[in-house]
Length: 206
Image 1: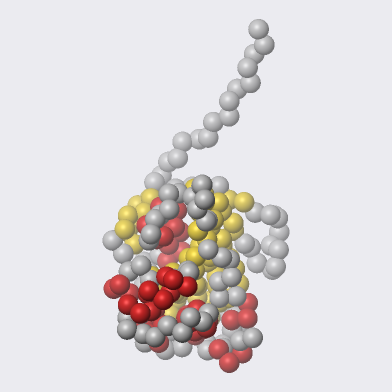
Image 2: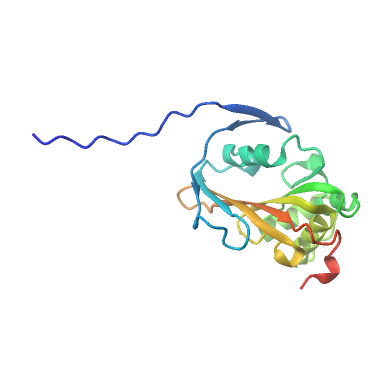
């Protein structure tokens, strides 16, 4: 009788690290990382991960997303949280306008994704919704303005646009969270503001 090939098993996960980000418990575990090249593609390294998790109305409560926030934000001092699913964050554009240009280490952007979500969110703060995409542009411009050169922006949504190079940001990390079935993937982007970018470059946007 022929010998069966030995099944390949993954090593056990050890050294769990637990951190709390805004009252949410995160479990930091090793992740499988895909790199398209051993050399940086654009002069800097891009880290791309794909994992699976059940979808949640608050994306930050998905374990892989929460883990990324723990890893990237540290003690979260010097960060602005604009989670539209959390009323305590306030109206995102106004929350960002409270900060001087280049004053923050980072911003977490988790804006409404669809037009219906945006309308409901904006009207909940007594604001007027004009049905235009310019709302998202204003939000991104304000986020770019308050982040210092070398600081980070973490964007949570369904696309990989982020703040983009026209605002002086380089993509460092992409987390793709698949949900299976008919669900869209959740994308989490980590961008770093170029050290040479001016603190407020809104007038230079295309």
